[in-house]
Every structure is written in C-alpha cells, then in structure tokens.
Image 1: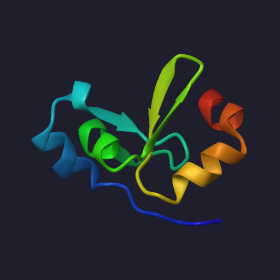
Image 2: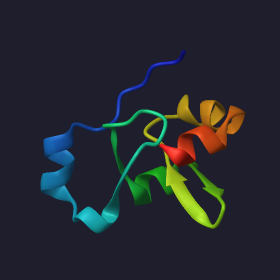
Image 3: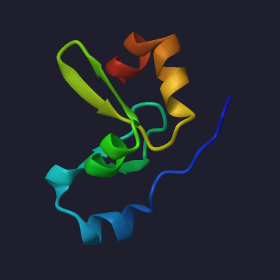
Amino acid sequence: MAHCHGHGHDSVHDQHDESELAECPVMPGSTVVKAEAEEDGLYRDYNGRRYYFCCDSCGPLWDADPERYAAA
C-alpha cells in the first residue's frame, strides 16, 4: 500500500479555521486543507459529498473502493 503524509495536525489547525479543513478518508488522522486539495485535484465527489485527500496516492486507493472509505 502506498504511504503518504498529511499536514502536521497542530500547524494546520493553527493556520486555518476548522471549516477549511477535512480529514483524509484513506489515511485517517491526516488533515487536509480543502482549498489546497482542490487546487491539486486531490478530491473525489461521491454520493453528493466531496472527499479530500492528503496526497496523490490516496486517489487511486479511493477509486478502487470508494464505498469502503466513505463509510469510515
């Protein structure tokens, strides 16, 4: 399995409002800045909801089984 690193929890939370952040569904505990993920194409829309990823390795994992990660 591919491994990637999200942003450091404390530094991201200090710099952004909670509404600007999301948790990567593929790598739980990895905080994602929504605007940055959108700029980089690191998101998927699924069942009317947008999911944000911490790195480009998470997109293909999501694509292989979105139902699994959406339920997490």
